[in-house]
Length: 258
Image (tube, rainbow, N blue to C red; front, top):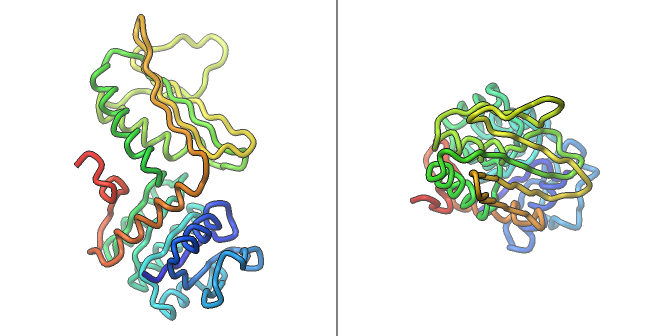
């Protein structure tokens, strides 16, 4: 498998490079908005480091099988178009997407296989399934969600939090979401409280509370290292390579809920 990795001067892109090196994966392209900031110790001599603007030509020149993307929404949209033109599969964990960004992924999926996931942790994939089951089984219980990430994360709530909230909605029907509370704010029936914490270098924590009159259930996932996301993305890339054009999910890679 011949890989390209974008966002390689960032936290997650750099982690993907390191994980690929540990697994002896062939990274032929390391792409960054600032190529000089890419850690050359994480790539081998055959890896070409290129700027974002050079991605379309570089994908074709290096016969890339899969591009792994952890960037920003607008950059992802550009990468998706480049993958579609070059016939390269796309795996992305970029979050904070608008409908336009999701449309760009759908357009690319008309030509190449595309897998977008807000989280590439196996544990989170199972957590999402469990949250849906719990929300259905405890249909009259109050639901609150708390998530925490490092102080540099730009989108809130996290993409993973939104997926967990969607799992509750799938089980119960759409519920109103209240983002934090202040002042006089009594709980309305059926609402879901959503609370985002941004502090220090927290890798990622998600906790869903289901509380009844005399008990509460808490389902929690904590990521101890970004490596778990990088390895999951590489697993997804290996699974996606060579598949038909279309949109795929990380749950399909793991066969969660199958």
